[in-house]
Amino acid sequence: MDPDFVVSLLQETLYTVLALAGPLLVVSMVVGLVVSVVQAATQIQEMTLVFVPKMLAVFAAMVFFGAFMLDAISRFTFMIFDLIGQAGG
Image 1: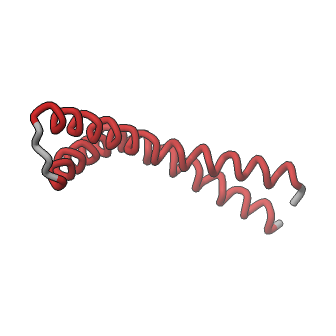
Image 2: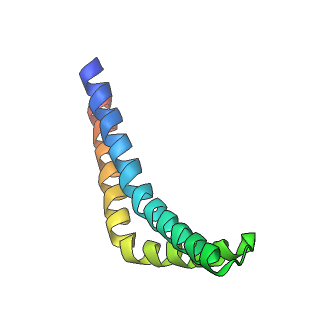
Image 3: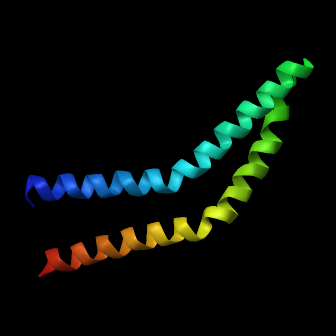
């Protein structure tokens, strides 16, 4: 394995991680921000109020982005298996 191969494999791995985690993290962050603004506007300072909307939003995002996420992880898995097959001879 040469260094260029390792760097390209690392880049593909990081891209896949960002593609899988990114949409869910963005949705969670946006919902948390909206709930925090509503809490600040209404002066309701309940710490547990944020969790239920975040969980529902992340679940909805998983349903919405599920096909894309499954496609991304399966493409990455097939690529890794092909590379293992090529390395084995």
